[in-house]
Amino acid sequence: MTTMTEAFRADADWARAQDAADPLRAFRDEFHIPIHDGPPHGEGEQTYLVGNSLGLQPRGVRQAVLDELDDWARLGVEGHLHARHPWLPYHAEVRDGLAEVVGAEPAEVVAMNSLTANLHLLMVSFYRPTRERHAVLIERNAFPSDRDLVASQIRFHGHDPAEALIELDGDEPGGTISMQAIERALAEHGPRIALVLWPGVQYLTGQAFDPAAVAKLAHAQGCTVGFDCAHAAGNIDLALHDSGCDFAAWCSYKYLNSGPGAVAGAFVHARHARARLPRFEGWWGRNEATRFEMRPEFESTAGADGWQLSNPPILALAPLRVSLDIFQRAGMQRLREKSKRLTAYLAWLLETRLGDTLEIATPSEPERRGAQLSLRVRAGRDAGQSLFDSMTAQGVLGDWREPDVMRIAPTPLYNTYSDCLRYAEAALAWRRQHA
Ligand SMILES: *Cc1c(COP(=O)(O)O)cnc(C)c1O
Image (cartoon, rainbow, N blue to C red):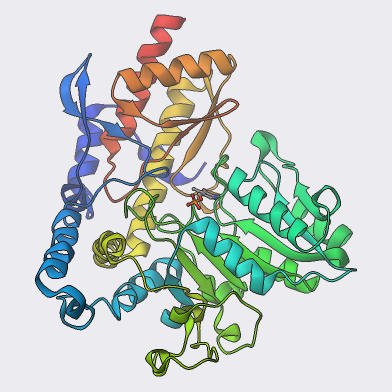
């Protein structure tokens, strides 16, 4: 237990006082909080603890999208150069914001495509299997899309996932994975591993990994290493450049609040900026200076931009631009500071009020988790489902991941100490009915 927890209290006045003293409190007003209309509180704002699944809509998004529609109506093709935010260099408008969020140099990041598509494109360049070295190391219980993409890449290169896909089991209570386990797996299988594809934050357990530590172990065994930062981007203080990892990708609809199916992000480390790596090419990855000369040969632009295929979807980039502006004003460091304390408060409430009912699978050390806590109901899956349904009916939203995990994530941009208390109170109400 950290000393931080000693001052926590489980009453509404205390929680409200914390919210009032929160230096980031004004940011909540920049989001649409969904409305819950049911008992027991009548109509009111939901307690939305599911920003790890779909972040809420920033109020500025609607106008930003309407502006693009208006510019298209007003200008037609000339919008490429003369829109308020010209479309031709539009992706560059989100570059600095993205770089700040993930701790990268601006030229190392690009907004494009979707997460799974980006991981495929990056694996084309960074998964270069040989006969001796063609395995990929991922974690057991990886997000299905990640497992699918890795297995299909392995097959695409003529190998068999049954042999070449290594899934590392959790070795800690709750199913989390120690650094020692990663080290052991790399020591055992290192010479046949081509790529380590690792989560920044594991979606099911909420465990955060230090990309630098994982990258160091992987590189020591001669493996390339990439990170899926779906649950890490906008959540923990990533330092992707300093981590030394080769590549990373993330989606923007979770903590980055950029809307369903939002344009995803990709990171390629600066040391590969001008490398002649095999890649799947498209005209938007060309050198910008000569892109419109329509030459026959592909000449890639330097940095992550060189992995782009197509001109970007402007209507979908507008929300990302608005969202990143919020992150830049709030600052990742301040957000992380608040996030640690908010999640510690929620964990403290659950441990002290509901410890005999709920078990927290997520690590308790603040450095080994982000906003999310993954919970299991001790009485088993059916009780877990019952609790989850009851919470939803009470206007307290988390999400449910089979077979038995409830995930809740107080996000520092719009969640409050009062939200955390409301979660605990709603769970206690369920327990009173089911005791
Ligand atoms: C959310 C998530 C995805 C979703 O992939 P999309 O390509 O955005 O649909 C994939 N992997 C992980 C780990 C995720 O958390």
